[in-house]
Image (cartoon, rainbow, N blue to C red; front, side):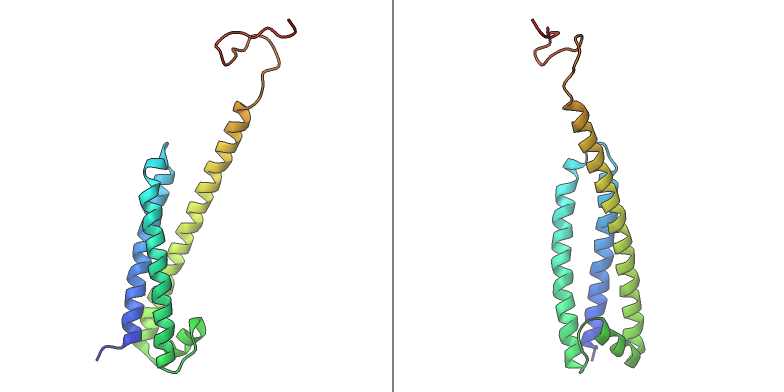
Length: 146
């Protein structure tokens, strides 16, 4: 009989790997000139995977409880100490989660950089010219003080 906790860890690892690959796609989208066409399906897939991972985490905690372990990292540490197969799969899952976390951090930096650039560009565009010689919104050079 296959161990239910081990099977859950395998499923969770596969989902984290998929999530990490979606994060790589997101990074690629964030580095193109016009990412808005690419991002909506990526965000949708990320949301779906986050929900899936949350559900798998709940299943993992239930499997730990069935074995008499507490939930979360503490329970996994105890379960891994009791079973080499679980320890190996838990290690793979933790490594994949760390890669996904690193990729997500990189994407966050890219997003903040793009937002800062956009903010500065808007500030430049919103500056009202103070001297004659600049074209106004109507295409004419405004005459001030007349």
